[in-house]
Image (cartoon, rainbow, N blue to C red; front, top):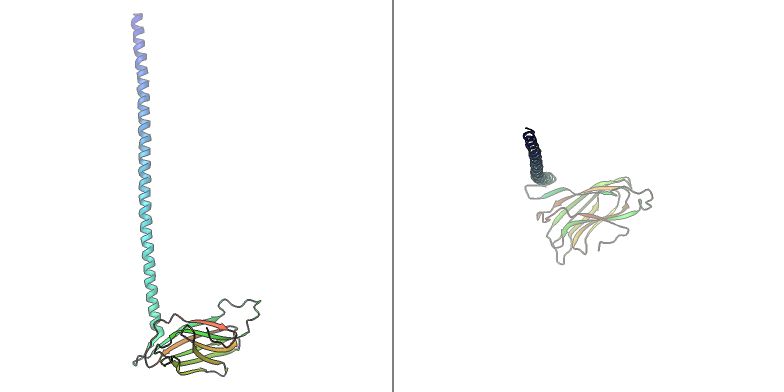
Length: 237
């Protein structure tokens, strides 16, 4: 009987060991499975997140590009409308363009230490008109000179057709009682310059309007105007 009990005890111990071993194996298997599952789902989530991010960035980029294109289109439409407003065409095809140039001197204001702010200067306005362009023109400048405390008003007319090239029927005038010299000339770059001065440079502002002559407008672009100041009555070289 004792031997049978001992043998039974051994069998129970063996079963208990196997049970613990199997339980460890099962637990280990579940742990490995859980870790593998987490790794798989983690990788999958990361991949999905990456794909979503790429799609989001792609969509955002497309929307931004579309918004920029739309803005450019609207700006172009607004510029065209503004140009139509500024441009007048008569039945005789005489074209007038308002405010081809706007100018304020100086743009950022004067420095308190600036000692030349009231100095006399000559203004040279570069236009898009070239020699031998068969262009007839009238330019009208209107503005305000705080330096002399008076309005500004000048007119230039002329015609480029001549041989050798020069300005035909040239006329330039100060339309006020300021008695400021006005003239026009072709610079060495072959562009027409409108000139006036001398005048105090202290806070002068003006706009320039254009009108074509009887030959019709020959200027292709009206965005090539610029202004230069000189101390002496010289032509731009």
